[in-house]
Image 1 (cartoon, rainbow, N blue to C red):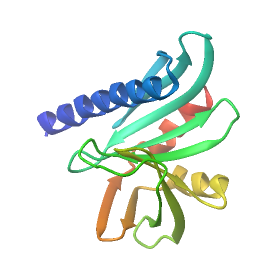
Image 2 (cartoon, rainbow, N blue to C red):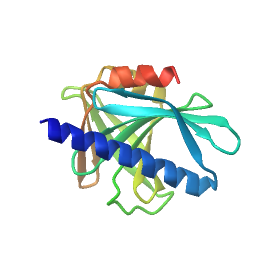
Image 3 (cartoon, rainbow, N blue to C red):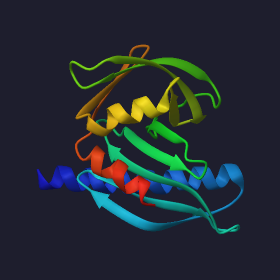
Amino acid sequence: MFENRLRRVIRCWIFLACFLLAAGLRSGEGATVKNSFRTANWSGGAYYDAQRKTFERCTATTAGGAGTFVSYSVDRQFRWHVTVSNPAWNFTESATRHIRMQIDDAGVAVNASAIAISKSALELQTSDPILLFARLRIAQKMRLILGGLVLEFSLDGGEEALSNLTRC
């Protein structure tokens, strides 16, 4: 059990490094991490533009199964984001897909758009992101259905991770 948890933590940090690298390559700028935190299976921190020395976003990430990750973020305009990623994916950047989200077993299903922000990452957008995060704050698990792809995530510790995001 400890080995599985250690693997998830390592994969989470690898993802964060890849996410930062991809974000830096897209913008042509580097990013630095400050105020790192770890809670339950989540890890994250505040990301700053290294050249302009400005806050970009605060992100918390947890590993799911089969190399998939889910991240919650809040940016400097106080917009909330949910991103799912997997290094093995190969989406066309900017492509949009319909995705169905189910939060907890008996939870309400939410229709969303999944926008490819890179080849290996999708940002989920709903008509009411504040309501989505209110639901995610108390959720224990999330299921995403994208065509024939079904992703399941344990969100244990998500409430504390979201709380950390508000303190970045």
